Length: 624
Image (cartoon, rainbow, N blue to C red; front, top):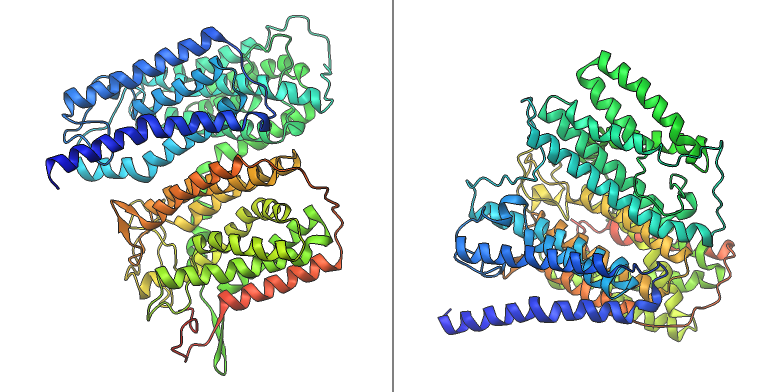
């Protein structure tokens, strides 16, 4: 490539990321403003502070890349020298940090609810996906021996004594998410609670509303009591996980949110009980005597705080549940990873004459059955057969797509997810001609699809498709041994530790399902739900593809083919959210038609993806 072509490409790259993408984000916020039910945030001072700070962080980081890295902030044309100076000494990826802060500030300044609660979070998630799905991997390849430590990195996973930096950084990574979560919940859930008719009822009368501040001081003291870096690191990680679970639940289902303190001015100094329990847990790990002492203090603090809850019983029980999930996150992961490995090596088949039945077909069959059944519950019997026809066409197109992309002598009947998305167009036309409201079907299919896909990933594990690339960490990787698995038969990776990419996908899809179901129950339009489905699944797929190891997937310009389709999925999703339609009246009555439709759909999918003809060499004949 000559210098002129390189300069033109760099210019085009700059135009895309500095002009086109920001313009798309601004237009997206503008044309979805009426769709967002969350209130806008009004603060001119905060808006300007965020904008200035974010812009300075971005500019200084770009300057550091130019001065120390001898290059530009472009993934396609990265600096040849690793940079750890300036903002890169403070935090990783400061340009993305700066852009996220700037974007939030701009939408606060312009009082845009859509910009703040839709565009900004999606943009931040997309930037995280870009780092996880490309930049972090690329940096490790290009600079394998460069140290990547920054000031704000978590304490190392060692038994060394903690220093003041470790303590302060740990405090920051717990306090910042806690402050942000309380502020967001106070701003959003407070108004939602009013909509839902929730009233604040104190169990006893406590006039001094500043007493709960003592629990914050208690949490702030925890990192100064923990002596080793590994315990401090664990405390930070478990605390962040707990805050994320709490915030996720509170925002999606505010009717269930019983921990929010209804102070008159929404003071942001509430410490949930689960953080206090996690702090005590960390202290007990290094000293039983100290743990007992601080447990007594914690009980006193909890007694002071509980009267500010709507329900002390629910407050305590939900806090214990969140604590158990966060504190056992690693054990939960190992349980899931071990289960995934067992399923990956569970291939079974039964041959009846010229027909073979494979056990992995039952997973997808059950997924389709459950998906149509759940969709029928949401929209009623009147859509039962439309849902079945829709599912049938989508499956057919997933097979046609995979034939074009991956079909070969070894893969006679593969299936491809993006073929299913193409099939949605044709399925929509068919059900439209049948007289159904196609938007209702697309909306409800979008709601149930993440869980259908998640169940379908069990088939991926057994079949060996969608498998991961090599990994050295045994706590992460899984091994495939069955000779029928694509891992062993096509990729030749038998017995190697591989990323459990189907499991990654399941976890992400599980969360997406709850988000979309919340949108459905809050009467968001079907195009918006479908658009967000495309956006969120596309973001997840971009990261997942980066850790896949299938040899038959083409690589284009440094990205796997399905990473490009994932990017396209995100942009199509943005367009879909802009479509404005009138809401349709839905009568949710479930009867025999929905059950029969779900049963037929499940049986068809089981046959399509779990039954083949092993002695035939015709196209679409064999699954393996």
